[in-house]
Image 1 (cartoon, chains in turn cyan, blue, green):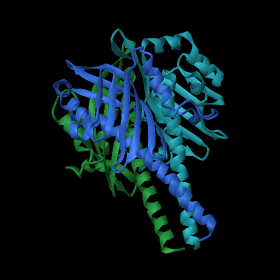
Image 2 (cartoon, rainbow over the protein chains, first blue to last red):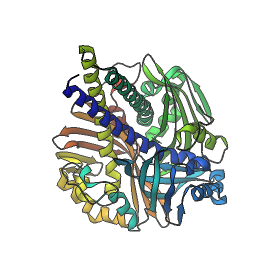
Image 3 (cartoon, each protein chain N blue to C red):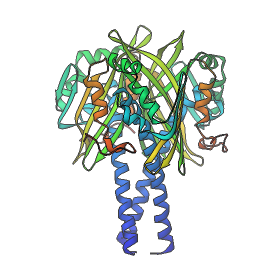
Image 4 (tube, rainbow over the protein chains, first blue to last red):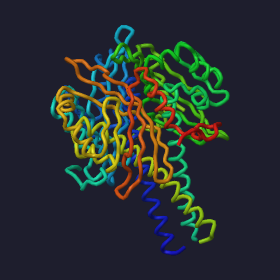
Length: 173
Length: 173
Length: 173
């Protein structure tokens, strides 16, 4: 095999790895909504790394045990019992080595007397890290899109500047 | 070419096949909403295998002909004429050989006198099979997330336990 | 390296390129919502090619400057200040060489006195082209799904007929 062909094979392996990494990150994010609406506390918690943080407007959870406790809480169980959908939109994922950043919207839609209402529309920024067990969340920060200033910044800050054609590398990451 | 390089090439082919299969499954699911809101009965029906089932709360359809009939029904045509969006969220897809399972949420959003309302938020579990013509749906089961117990179970049951880092292979599939 | 192995390597390169192209197109589409809700006019505009068009029901924008002006407009800035989420659903993407077509739904969800309402549900058809700087939008056409006839046609027209198993190549593209 010529050096050229060996190089093509090695380059292909890198390209496939990149696609697999982005797919793995998107898959962790896609698991959240179904698992949380299904009340599967253990598997929601296992999406986070042992030191992972879930920072929502009204609540800061650190580590899988606190995240599992949120899923098992009477408040969350009441949402499930009443009817609830946590939709997480298609994320914009950026993988750099063993780190990833992603942004998306999420909607919390709840059943209310035979109809459904959008209780919250939220900006999400996810940071993930590749560890021994695969990709896990190290920081998910959510801010409601109700006019508070942090929410829009969360969305734009999670899209690296270099990603958009014609732009030089930006502020983050 | 050394045995090592031949092995790397064969492994790469498998990895790319896996990515292509997941992409094909996600693509079938992404076609549903646009085709059903566009009233394209033949192409909605062709997403299902000849023995495929579409099981929604109030209706069980078996085979493409019954699914096409639903799209052509006066009830569905009235939704289109009034203004309707069937959003299918980003699916969590698991491909094992010629079988696939996926879960996602869906929203039915309808136009109502100049505004839009969420008529339904639904748990979706899809089973697909690879056949001569590609990936097709063999069973799509939907349950409204209005508090009925089957709906949350549908979501968690469609995410294999092994998928979450730190967990051993679970109940399904 | 035998001709057979060289052929397998070349075929793999093509397959990976196809996956990368679809991923790049989906990534441009996934960037729109976060960037527009974040008010990042320059980066929203840079998603479009220099001659790209953004055709919404009430407004036709041509070229990045007009698109940036829309983001900077008092009307759009008021949406951001009040709280706003432009969710773009998972797109159905078809790449053919240097051209791509994609369809999806979008929702505009706005904050309104402590609750959220769906202001618009919209049919989206995107055309993208690969240029020196990567994939960019050459035409995005949006029509509200309020019963107007163009909206459903936009959705079905953007899904090539050949894509559905058992169907021969269709009208578009």
